[in-house]
Image (tube, rainbow, N blue to C red; front, top):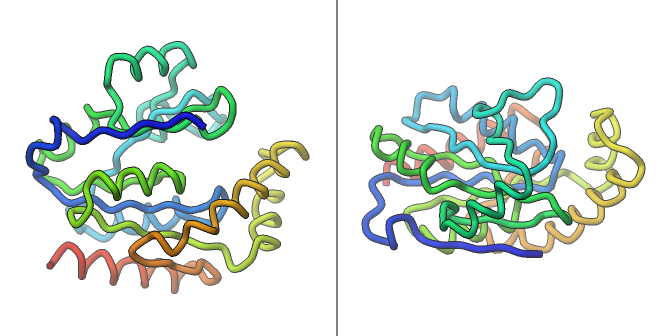
Length: 201
């Protein structure tokens, strides 16, 4: 894997707090992020950049900034990412510095929907100014079932995602809190409580 991480503005001053929501693919982090955004907590979604193809229901600039591999690598070289990772060969994901500058300039707190390694990179950068939540599936079998029913995976990509999830689960204890997503409503309520407490501290 190739990854990188740099503080915003050379580490000088962080205007807002950050909520980092990470999970293995299919564990339900996006559902929890959407719930938190609807809670009127002063959060604004940090749109990640990716080099993967855009899916039919996705919107460029809203779900992700969709970049070619060459464009992504060019932005890495130009120092435009706070953090980035090559999650799969040729599949890059990262947080653009300009996104955080935009969110914090508006006086909001940033919320991230990122993979596990990216989440840990962001937590390392922003430390006590960030709350890092790990969303865990109830089991790897349940996760495989969810991914299979998305109808977006080939047998090969499904196997890759399940193997990657098994590895990512070993990092869960490095997060500030773990939310087991065995019941969507309960998981969202738990996440809201943790975020409210963090933002009010």
